[in-house]
Image 1 (tube, rainbow, N blue to C red):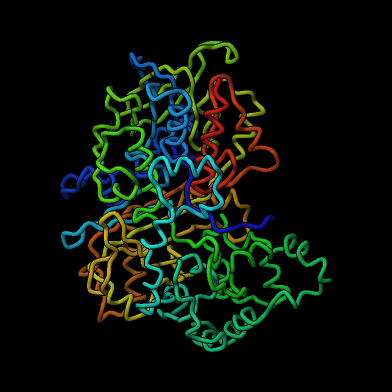
Image 2: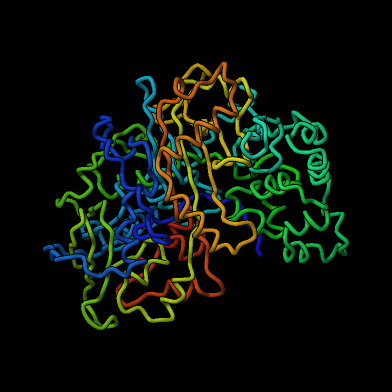
Length: 612
């Protein structure tokens, strides 16, 4: 098991991401219009992310082998390039193609969602007449100083100045408001609603400026946790334990911790068998890796700062985790779209686009060289003849339950790589088999618009780790003000809080099985289920004299990513799967494999340069 680092939650879009049938009862709520909600995608609340219906056709294709989509309308549209997937990688592919071949080249980007950006999802909440901007997935440009020249040049060209975040991000917000990292134990799992001022892990570390605890010693923190006397003793043993307890020669330590399981270390070396302590440990890595810590090596658990490994003071002194637009990497996606379609919004750079309202009617305007067609699930991509000699590719997609076909000289598949064998006709079997080995782990970002954050201030909560809840972390949003947008200042002002959930399957089960089971549970829930969970979570954690859910919560957006972080297949399967096939090439983070914005862009650059 290899080492991991904190990864930005990105990927190309999920144009055909299907790994479980969409359970019944998950269609788009019928009362959106009745509620008077806008049809402007960023401002829609309720079930978002991979919103209900977005993957319905992909699921039918992958799971039911559906091939009869009714009469296909052959559109009189021909493109130099069709891009399947409108996430960061897909948008970058369109950008690179035009840059390499000329701005007059005709490009069509197809995406199955009602918004562009893939995981780079913008959420807007209106509270007290004020628009609050936040992110529903892809958080931050991670370590931009380490970006390739290709990525750096693209960011510069679309008007992203990463040095601007040094002043836009309020580094002292958490310290000024005495907001730190705590842990919330809920009544349902731990028998008592209780907040303990200790994070018990390193996860809050990536919030630049977060007060990393220190409110309580390990001894006092363990004493306050609602566990049995034996459980508290075991917890303290983990907190005060360490790798020095391993009977391993110093020169062999790294090999040992990379080849031995963290849970075996907890149980066999530290003597932990209390279910509460093991639950705290399992959830202490959250989404640093793509699994719970029950599937981590000791080395991976140490690197991500799981329970028993001391938190670090800062994320990275040379690369602070602060390159964050108010809407996360949706700011990058919007800047890319503006570069591709000039008339879509007003603004000359990414910062000026922060408050700009995009005209979605411009996305698929036939007068533009680049067109972005949303709500369009690609179901078949096939060459017009022998892949090695064909001069064109036919692309079939479903829009409004009707089948359409366009022609292209070239195609870039910037979608979920595991779906490509279901979409691309005639793939060599070895390549198709390799692509089927790629997968993704589920992840959920829920954003909550609140009228004030007095209760968070009173409880001194900058981030609350919550091992008993669906959302294992609750945090104040990143304190960024730029482009005319002002982050919340006073506890009396409206705010957005983030709730992050990384669902796992049965403890100890193989990762792919856990992903599948967790994905099905995620998609089987209705909005009322998520709302009830959030109501219980916040109501149990915050003081009742300062927080009332019905009074203080204005809106909720649940961004469900059933196919979230990229998880590469074994061996050389990723490289085998991404090989060019005639006039079709493959982009997306999956083809790296990786899970950050820089990788998404690099893979798009490679795919465009591999075209015939």
